[in-house]
Length: 599
Image (tube, rainbow, N blue to C red):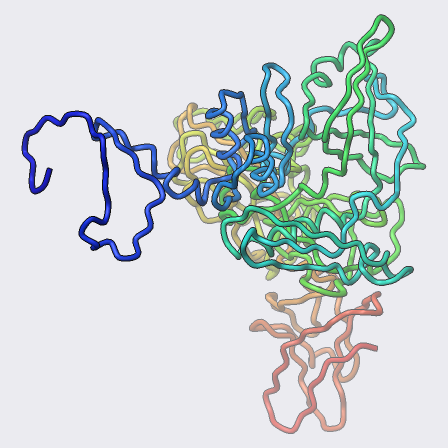
């Protein structure tokens, strides 16, 4: 048939020809299909391009469906494959799994395959928590292994019929340097069915990350459930790709919880025992970060942080210290932002929780075990500890639920006063916290309530902000200590006449110094005949001239030089031998030497 056909009935098609008029030039035809409906080709787009740019997890599920084999990924994938290679169904699935770098295993409930995506192993909670000193079935003693299995410090990844990328670890304990500075060369190479030439570098980086993770291995962990019925449900639920955690390990093992990733297991069940032995690898390499919104979060993956390249303690620690000073030796400094805390440090093997980057003064900001130090303010506000509505922060254990009585223009929950002497007029402080409103609320915020030595409120401050429905939102404001204030409390407040149904939740409420520096002063106060107390708490001393030669005003500490060849000096004790000093200096008259020095 030629031309335009408005209505026709065709018979059996017995021949299709192309290029009779020699008008196709160099056109190449890969597939020809004939259908009998207008929708016959709706699902052919993927086939026509060889399933190019298909996500690895989707490819495994599709191949399973085509072969009538149960094949289920644990989550959506985030890595794309190139054109589907030729091979058996299992070979194609394995090639896709290598692109995603997950684990392809067997289903337990049905005859089929289960693919554990790499992304589903990120930042996951422990499926089974065991106590080394408990009676939950853990078979002890554990046998740690400190060997070179899985170590690779020189990785090359190539794309099939494409480019390659190579990364090496040149410094550190597992670097390519000769011992004792490293371990020598452990090289490996991989060719993967990747989509484009941007991917090899990322894959090389991830494999290098895994291959140079310096942590003692526990290749096998066993539980005997015959005498631990309370552990049966959790232990039996552990599958390939699950996270396992062991607490309270003895002193001869590395300190802190043992976090492991299950890569397989064997199970023995007879008349005497029910034993499961998990094959494990370190889980901490899978604690990774995503880029997310700075003020609201919906998942724990948005609350991870980059490490610095190197830091050390600025002083020895004893068993009672709660304030730790550190020097950053290389790379970025530790974050000064209270919004980034809390997070865990590992110092000499011991895990410490950083609760704020600068000193904070209010009690119990995280409500881990109770609401000690907090109360509902006037207007009938009630508070309760909630373990059902919890921020997706890896450190969060609970939140504080605030329920209005209804009928009042504002409701609040507040901390106890800090006690006198904690704040100085003119100082700046940050007030902050995480807020959650199930239905959203236009005016939620942290507020500072300043009080004098007798406990009478002299001022309060904070800026109300809208909180969207169903999202934990971080709110922060900077406030200045007013005159006559010597103590403070932080308040979680809702304006706009909330009803008793307008419940909201808070976590991480803190009032912190604006700087994490060991010594800093913004000179926000007014003082005469002295410089008084620095914003960081130290007291300034003076030398030279008379008391009238020293004052603080207008954001500066000032010296008056009444005579020539007579110096004026302000100083404060500082116990550290290694530090950087940053000072803003100015002078009212020319030809006067102004400088800062350490002595």
